[in-house]
Length: 251
Image (spheres, rainbow, N blue to C red):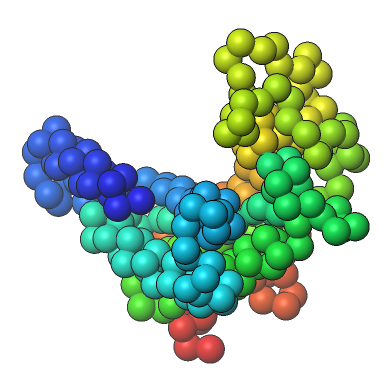
């Protein structure tokens, strides 16, 4: 993500040049929606590859989540310093339910690889705390958490997605689609495109509930539709209505 932030800094400088001043760029950027997702690959392609990386021998899952969140905080703060004021932070999904995880580790009688999903939950809980911290301390910005894990726990068979344990396309040794093979024809029935990545059908579920939360737990403290239209944080209370940023900070 640090490399992406450097590229974004270049983009911001170009916006300044196009609009003619820092003030104009600031006003422009504060209207933009930023969608950020980090963490999935830190587990799939690092922590749970002990034959390649030593991370899992150096940190417990809880310690590793703390290390990632500390780094994430500095990266999000940098994004804020570049002008971001409306930011949606997507949590880690059900990484233990990918075709790759199931074939690589086995499920020991469960539907998914529980140790991977537990690690994702530890990270997500810390990410929610980070969102609270950011909203408390950077009061001219709004940060929300999107519960990709919880949304992904939906019974997708009710939505016509019937194949969840294998990908739509034949894959190579690295779990990605083989360029010489033909993918499935009924791709709307598959949850995964290859051994890692969700199909459009599954992404539609996440995107829809991220924008308009179906359950109170889908997003925190508000969904993306409110983030897009409001300049204030609005915290859902137990009655299902919303309190303003000022009321939130006074509570």
